[in-house]
Length: 307
Image (cartoon, rainbow, N blue to C red; front, side):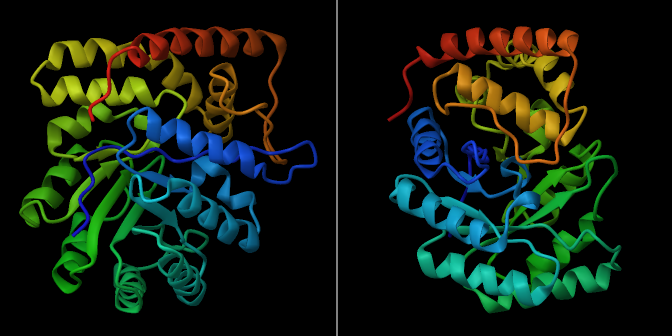
């Protein structure tokens, strides 16, 4: 049974000048993540601009993740689609190529009742054997009720993870962990902005981007060692960067790519259009924030990783 404990970053999608996917740079990003302490890797999620990728591109992205990871860490493939049929089709493909887990966001273009969400995930759980993660991505609201997670956990042995990307997630996190006696693990997303909240309420893993992975890994290790004040102080050094980035999902991805470029992981911070643009004052602010987190990352990078 797969367990996730630590930092499980979502890969960004590097693009060439013609906006095609730069697979070589994606491979370098995967190596960078694993070398810097990733407990697992994930894609193509929101952080990969999956909503701008074609279905063939998402399938190929999944293949690259599995091929480049080479079983060094578990690979989580994001397979959520607008229908049960498409989601199951992609999920079976991911299982076939060797994925270790599926991350699935419920259909979001239309609001669905709880019973339909449960039916959606029940059909998915019955169609594959590998673990399922429900991505509760409601960036400005409370998301799905905890009862849905508890219901699915009781019905399906491969429903093992809840990823929370909602406002004030702590109470829901604690309720899920308590209600399943820890069998259903909770992962926090949303760029890691609520990381300390998650650690306090029983979350087992965090799913930010990969550009500052060594900082998140260090925070997690400090907290697990009982050095909570040190963990908190280090996390607070990320807050200016995170609060600016999370004003808009496109900004969050773009600034993440800017930091990856600064660290020599990918060659450019190109976004696939449509996207946002900023004026010179914002550009200067972004450059300063990226440089500040680059310094913190390099400080953490010198700390020996666990074997």
